[in-house]
Amino acid sequence: MNNQHEYEVIIIGAGVVGNGIAYHLSEKKQKNILVVDKGFPLSGTSGATQAWVWVHGKKPDAYAYFTKCSAELYPELERKIGDIEYARTGGIEPFFSVEEMKEAEKMVQSQNKAGVPVELLNREEVLKKEPHFSRNVVGATYSPVDGNVNPFKLLEKYIKANRDQGVTFSFYNEVTGIDKKAGKFVVNTQKGKFTAEKLVLAGGLWTKKLGAFLDVSVPIKKVRGQIIVTEPLKPFIHHTIGGMMRQMQCGPVLIGYSMEKVGYDRRSTLNMIQETAKFGIQYYPDLAKANVVRCFSGIRVVPEDGIPILGKVPQVDQLYIAVTHSGVTLSPLIGTLMSELIMKDTTSISIKDYQISRFSKQPV
Image (cartoon, rainbow, N blue to C red; front, side, top):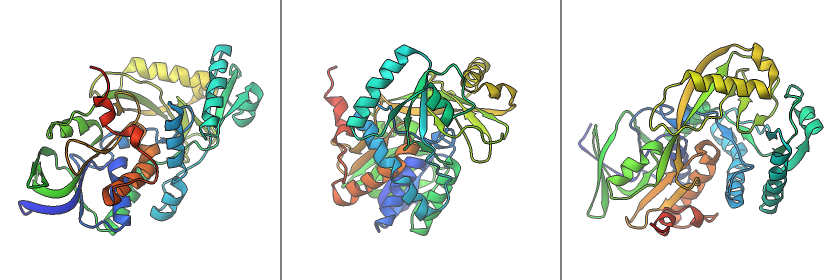
């Protein structure tokens, strides 16, 4: 490998966010793109997820509408890159008390007003949609736009499409420093130096460290989620169940709801796995008969205020950032909008609410 490689755009991070940006850039005929990753795709958060494409209930309501716009892009993305097992199952968020029902009613009204299709289901309507659900359910919110995808196939198809469109990848290549010299970014890595006119920070959990190389503070936190995977079962869960589970097309049920602030610790813990199993059985009593085949943990990257950080970094010219929770849900839209911003300096949907500059305006 030569010591110096020059690119028009370098994207640091090869998860669903980074690959989504690379795909839409290369599709728009942006040439000479490099994607760098410290590991291999799916070794980070993108490979340790339930991979919901989830819309309803997100706050604020404008953010729920933003995610709806992304969900609506999935059928066309699948048509272009190939089978990613995208399923628009509809999403059900159950509740078990009258108090929760009152909150759900408010949410339905505000989200409908914002353009997100959500309805309130009573107990009978929930059980009609999900006959195996617990009879203790009081009701649920339901949206037809929620669903899920296979994250392994999504990344595989993204990478193949990107390579076909001329994108270069450098895996197992940690970034050790970033400088800006003579108007260009110099990205120092374990395998040498790369230069670029434009740089995109899409490194998920590691974006804070990447930003620090350029004296940019990236306000994100790490949150662990633990997930149970059952043996393959006959189809009995027909929707994506918000806050808890889904059944894959090949049969296994994925169950997980935990949000633990433990730093970068990807261990599975017995107490949380037991608690997750109990919750799963409370939703679907028949799960008590199922065998667990494995458990895994993933670390979510969550901006401090819970919504995406997207767009330009004001203090560094030609530096862009894309870091968020719900990367699978948002990948098609983030890819579309960030590619527009990089190539045309404008976006078809406003991202002003997601700019990193919002944090500097907050009181200390």
